[in-house]
Image 1 (cartoon, rainbow, N blue to C red):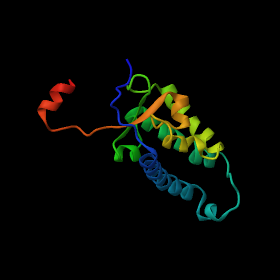
Image 2: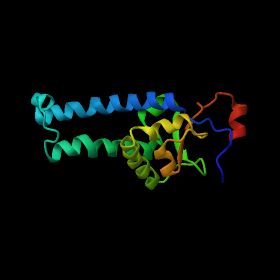
Image 3: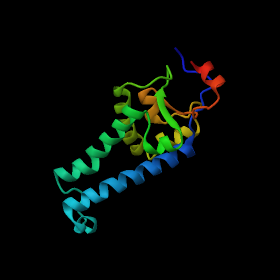
Length: 156
């Protein structure tokens, strides 16, 4: 089953705005935890890593939160705000957990390539970033449900 041709792919700017909102949300979660573990000196120190709890809170926990959000909602809070959804590029259905993990790891590759992997969204026909292409996913605009019963009967 191929994905519908009329899918509205999410472009660069809306995805950037959703990513910024997600980063702010993670920041609001992570900073208080770091503060409670390490105190205020943590934020004035030149030390990049303060041990296991720091790695857990700064890398592992955010990764798990993002992937869990993708698995449960096929989205993140920022994407949900803009009615965006991650779908399988071939079927238009929900991606497999493996695809979400590859997608997340692809973020790091895009960063290593000086962000080029993210800028690809602006130039690809299906608005896919490098991590989307690696995982076989696309991000589409999820139209809000309609109140028109006639429209609902056609979609069933």
